[in-house]
Length: 181
Length: 231
Image (tube, each protein chain N blue to C red):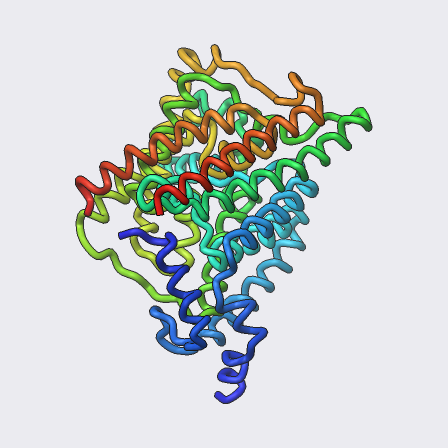
């Protein structure tokens, strides 16, 4: 396939789809899309709030009832538990992040299915995932909703979140070096 | 062990400077697959548009976020971890730039609503501050470092093909449900006693934005000094 090689070799293609953008370009682009997203939807970007609903929908699929949970009676971050995975826009946006990254990786011919290397990594993923999920619920969001969107919303909560997330990252690094490396 | 950090990106930049198009992960030309997935994503976008504008818009914006995060190797975890681990603050400073630009944009939009006498949108993101905020953020910080990815980073790495982050996502969801289950206790004991602070309420619209930008600038300068000292 000669045409493919030519695309692959072209300078423009390389600059747009193969070379990593400098961090500050990433920052500018993220900001532009955050602002567009807010202007159109009236709600800043959030990632993790909906994950509680994903869990709830899975539980409901297996017959459990979460309706009387206090959390799902109060609407947090505009998420309505009566929606389903495919009808909730925020779910669709999260799937979009995965697929967008997939397209980007493929366009750069960087995609590779990378298997887990060892059991320690799995343990890190399990504990880390649980901590992030629990922390995001009681802290009103994750690095996107509580931190990025919080600070951009001129909320003091974003800064408080940032300080303690940094302290957590320092402790996490110590744990990582001691137990997971 | 450290994914998405500086090393990989420096390496790929280095490779490009040298003009060698070989990439560490390059197996073969994957452009046809990229085109295929892009086409499918477009068809899904049209399908979603027939359902509702919202679904279609969120889909497109998600694709854009994923593309930008992957293409620029933007990693919140590294931006919080690397100052301590390696001394590099390049990502930290990029993140601060994003904070600054986005807060300017958000504030202008909110101000337009405000002067038109409309309800200011997005105010639910001004979250109550309490012990639960501090502890939640602290746990989140630990979690993202030992799992190797934050919320957006986990999704991005699934797209890149990391099996590990698929496990992280499953347990992120489990942790979220667990947190939702316990939420009433946290709300009764801490969150309900917390307070919401919207900077413009104290300093006015312009003052609030200026204070936010001053905090960002201060941290930016500290980060720059820190890197000069450490590297």
